[in-house]
Length: 148
Ligand code: DAT
Ligand code: MG
Image (cartoon, rainbow, N blue to C red; front, top):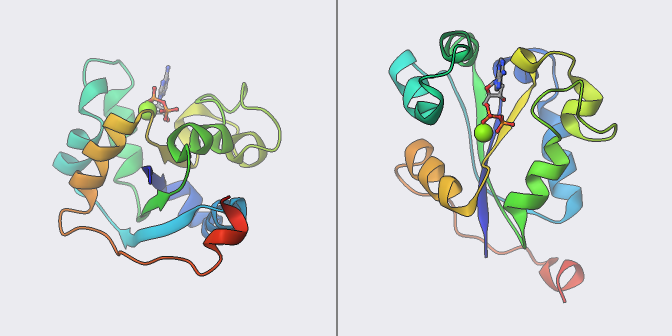
């Protein structure tokens, strides 16, 4: 099944949003397949956001990501990449729909609480970067009650 990389950014950790964010993905019916609380170094943050390295906000973005611990996760489920992005909401919280994570919990684009992969391809890349030793292979006993 499809997997995505989700990261609770330093502001989400500091603000105590970890439990609620995990709960949102759990209750939806997605499966947690990897998770760690980690402080990343500058070169690692630059690698994660390498596609944005030419953007004027890149330096500030990297500073933000290394400003405190983050929660890195792998979530699995049907259409989890696209649906995960919908749950997270638009990049700029001013444009995020109410009820999305960013729409509910964020105000500024540079403090938007959470990251989610934007395609299956980038999910694979990001999971390999953040979880080089792989993830956990387990099956939920609730699976037949969530998936037909
Ligand atoms: P997303 O995180 O929704 O996938 P992105 O990949 O385009 O958005 O950008 C990564 C992060 O960079 C984003 O979560 C917040 C920051 N960012 C994006 N566009 C920005 C902008 N115009 N000004 C400041 N920060 C920006
Ligand atoms: Mg992105």
